[in-house]
Image (cartoon, rainbow, N blue to C red; front, side):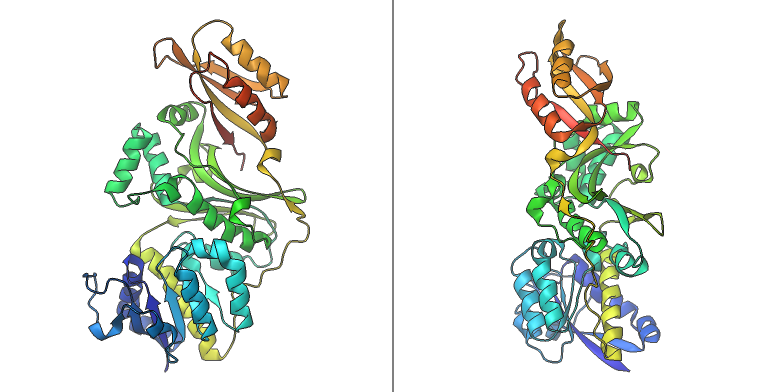
Length: 431
C-alpha cells in the first residue's frame, strides 16, 4: 500500500480536525483509496496548548521549513489563514515539488492567478475545497460535476457570522448589536468581526466562485462590497412586512456581455430557497443552462465540516500521485462572450429606501420630486410609526433604477433639512 506523506502547517481548530479524521478514519480511507495518508510533520506557532487529540510530540515543530524542505513530504496543507506568511509557504512548497491543500480564501482571492500559474508551471496542484462553504462540496461540483454547463449566475450566503446576525434579528426581534454580541459569545464571530460583517470575507469567496463559473479572475478592488452594519432591526421588520428577508448575498451574474460581481445586503422574497437559510449555515445557489437551478447547503463553519473538505482534497491528490498523474488545479476556460465587468454605477435594481424625516407636510413631496428628477419612480410608499419625537421613518420601494441615478438622488435628498439620518438603501434581488 502506497504511503503519501503530508505536512500540516497550522494546528488550530481545522488542523486538529484534519488529524482527527485521518486518524479515526484511517482504515476506511485506506480501503477506499488503497493508500495511506500519513501526517509526517505538524507546524504551528503554539505547539504546547492542548488540542482535542493526542499527538506524538516528535511530530510537532514551530519551523515550517522542516515541512517545506522535507523531500519525503508529498503534500503540504496550509491552514494558518491570512496573506503572509501563508502565501510564501504555498510558493515555497510548490517550488519544492509539493502540491498544496489550503482553506485560505484570502490568499487565493488576492494572489490566486499567480499561485495557480506557478503550480501549473511546476506540474503541481493547489486544492481549496474548504475555502468556500467549509464542508459544502461546491468547488468540486463547479469544477467537475457541472463541467459541461454554462453559468448564468451564482448567489451565495457564504459568511456564517453575518447570516447568524441577520437570522437572529429576523427571528428573535433583536438589534444588530445584540445579535452580534451573541455571535461572539457563541464563537460564531471573532472579537474583531469586521471582515465578516463588512463583507470582505464573502468577497474573497465570491472571487473564487466567479473564477470557477465564468473563468474570470476578478481583482478584490473590482468587487463592489457593502456590509450589514447599517441594517437595523426596523429594516428587517419592514422587509418581513412586505414579504422579504434580508440576506448578505455574494452575487456574480452575467447581464448580456457584462459580468456583475458584488456583495451587499439584499432583499429576497421570503419564498426563495436562500431566504430559509438560517444561523451559521451557508448556501450557494447556482443557475446553469443544463443542470438548471441548484442549491448547495450546509454548515459554513466548524472544525469537522471544514476538515472534511481538506481530507477530500487530500484523497483526490493522493489518487493522482498514486496513479502517477498530474491533475491541474483548474481546467478553467474563460467565457469569451463576457466582454467586461459592469461597474456598480451601471447596475440596475429595485430598491428599498428608508428615510428618517421630520414629521411635517411637504417632505414626502420633496423626496418624490428629487427621485423623479433622476428618473426613479416609486412603486410604493408608507409612513411608519414615530420612533423619536417629531421624527418618522418613511419607507419607499422603487421601480427598477440605475445605481448611479439613485446615488445622486440620495445625496441631494440627504442634504434636505427635513432628513435627520443618512438614508438606508438596500437592493432588491429577483434571483
